Length: 305
Length: 305
Image (cartoon, rainbow over all chains, first blue to last red):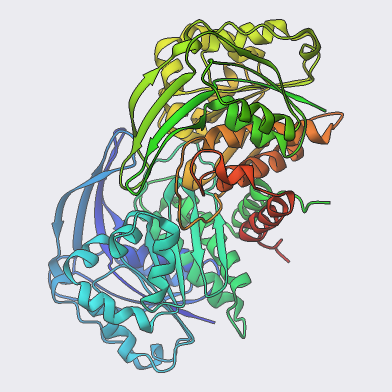
């Protein structure tokens, strides 16, 4: 089955302590769509400007990503520039130029509206809701969010939460949205705000998943060298959503979600090995399966006799 | 088999945002010995003052903790007082009075020197080495350490490392001792300093274990409420060491160590549920086994078909 992905499509300029690359493909939808495409066809929704490379459309099509919902608008593509601190754990936004993204009001092609799995990648909650309003009967709706929306459009976000099957957010956002320092209490409190499931991304510490009766904790893949952390969270969401859609399970239960969280983590671990989407562009299914197995080995221990 | 535990024995005064308790049993050896005693007999080495309650000796004996290496010296027992911040994640030392601990120079009873498993709980590395020098042929030597020794007695610590089978330290200490922000690189670098295995404690994020060819990652037990974090790391070390000793395995391999890390985590998760050692005093083996199983359930996911 397919997954519909909506979010930002950007040209990013990223500086790390070691190197800098300008105008490379970025944005939440770009990472999420490619992450998902390893497991299922993707219906992509977004907006780009006149300067956006035609070659990226060709790349999407080569990966079964249907850009039928990507508008090309007059003006320039959304641009973001950021710089990472020496330890790659914190980053500063150097500049943001919304450009064509400023007036983005996604209109879904008719044939996108029956997509069963929906990933509302990180954009304003009002836009996420606007897309969801156009879907007919989605089976599983996932949304990613960020601190900016918690701080500036909290009402929109609160209205969206009860419409979600799964909310994805990171550790500090989980604490911020609940005002609770305990991640365990925070994860459970967010579920009471509406989403059936909540996934908390913890970067180098892995991820947590909260369900109605279950809890899951996994570590991060033990990478020694990270070249560019940009897009890791978006790729996690994409891999997770794509895996669920690709399995086409009649019922999404907690066991499926556990595996989906691992696949999301696997995809994110590849993402950060190179700038932009460069590692994902050449990634193979065999590499993904091998790393999934590594995840299993690194976290297993035996049943007591 | 037995495990020899050496470390500090203190009377702690601990303040959290909610409550304060004075002159309760504390110190690295106290927590570690009780943690270990759920799995194996313990030979305890330490020093207390004339004011130390006789009832604690009775408590130790009731738990198969042999206080044959605990000297009662003229003067007062080591006292420590600390206060936790509102989120319980950071603490400030309010006062330290070394008292009888200042001149502590452990002399092991003859019948302690053949103990096969050794846990050098958190004390100065020179004292840890002094104890190790008195052991005859220990099979497995574990040491815990802290930032203070990395900063003030680095040479002593460096000299100790090659004599260890397992070094236990926390996340920030792993970064400090290596000067590397990546925990994965740090863990591997510490192994190259001498210990065959390295365990990194990450508090609410669980623990990592590094071996010659293997890597293990586990989460923390999802506690909603923590009453007093004091001694969690010492209890982790004690539970881990006690489990290894109690199994009496001919050869300690990575599979044993994985389980030992889980048992250490289980014990630490109980420790923080109450002040001082109060939760551990009434803990049962059945509760430990149930929580071990919870750990397994919360971290398992399936093999790919």
